[in-house]
Image 1 (cartoon, rainbow, N blue to C red):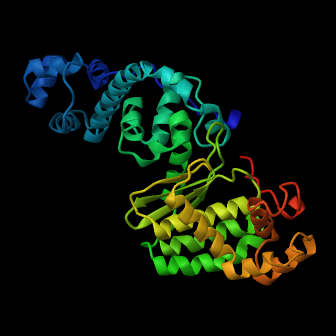
Image 2: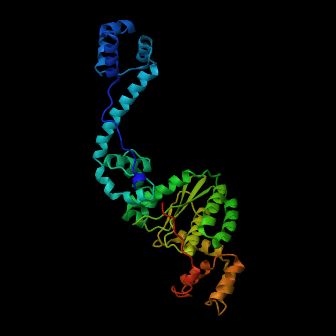
Length: 363
């Protein structure tokens, strides 16, 4: 935890550059009137600078440079530091009025996963959360994430836990921003999906990077984001731009067949449905689009004719038969077991030894 704590040192205050100028006058034995005369400026103006009532502008900085042989940039930087400190101090007062909002945000989980840094000062912690979301205050967070026309607000999980859900969704956005995607290409995406289908036999260490690197070539950013408590989402599909789609997976359910089915289900949404829609997979919402994505994933993983031929055999409940069929299709046997269980052709307690569990490595 120590390495997650940010150095929170901030100066209690930063003085106006007029204070530095007063010290310099005393050091060199120059009066205010003398400085005004050397600069060619009114005595009142010089006095207001020394009293911190007037800031140093470029014209003044150049004059001070000539008088004291101290670069104009020094004076302008001092003025900038002072003005920034004043504004930050004012901003901290504004943030204090929103401290209670932090209670609804899963800060501990975000820190444990390394998504944000830990601060002892609550205003600094709030600032860190707002930076994560890319907003100025909780008011802007509400305006962006809770506005009526946001598609994912229709999601049951978003209605129940908007803060935690928005954290998970935002993390997917941030990870996707790191991926330089080519413009979306439907034909290429279909070709890539065919190649990825064969990766179902591999472990995450072998397929994750491959999935990501291949999909960006077709304009699809794929991110794997550990799920958060209170956010029971398997995956989400949405368009970040008209030419860049996002598939975000959580590994909820952990079994490999669920992960792969979710991935191809989300791919189905990209191929079949509109760019303005957002699809959050909670396994609780059933509509025509979700059914279409289910059919796409099911048929892409196992061709309907091959599946019918397989289940027409009387011995598909035998493990060796399932494994043989998987080898013929060049896919993981877990895909077959999961579908048999889903269609109630096999008890949920059977053949789970053929279904590997995937875990995110801990930070």
